[in-house]
Length: 246
Image 1 (cartoon, helix red, strand yellow):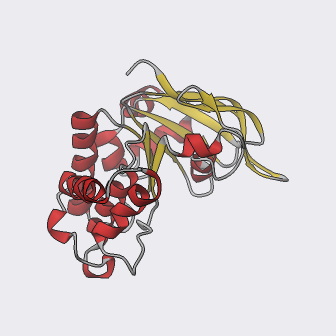
Image 2 (cartoon, rainbow, N blue to C red; image 1 turned 45 degrees about the horizontal axis):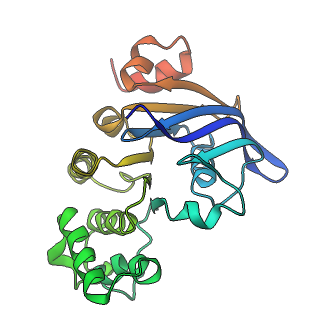
């Protein structure tokens, strides 16, 4: 867990003509659950888009598994990551099993029976094997996110990115999803990068957090949730982590 699987060095994040975050540097260690957090529009989702290769960084360097993100390395590095988008982004015309099979069919090179066996195993890992033949419209939002996590793990990625996994879920379903993330990390040694602003989830699953601020266009805190709540000298950080307390 001490070696870095993702490194950002002096990164400017944003889009051509629009810098959202300046001079961001941090690393994500293999096997940890790392949370990107902050208020709306602070740049946490923008940073994630850079890390999954959707957009190039404006300045600085970004490496995944020891390789720098470039146009030439993009195809190879995309095979090293898995992504669960906020809504799950399942294909509505495919069953849950077919959704998980999709990356295996496209990229694995396995025989058909082995692809089906692996997809069913992944659904079992997220406790949804009995939903294999159901359509996404026939299952709950929390279940769709579990299927999306199974699909994200299909190619045995080095890092799985989760975009707002608790969004739109009730507290019980959200806590159950947190338990799944912790179990997958424990059983598979997976590295997770999670975009979130939900304090109960952050304190339950995070090893470390990076916090961003829209007004300052900067990363303003890095550490464990407890360190940021109890030891930060930044008033904005303390308010964020102590909100709701008397």
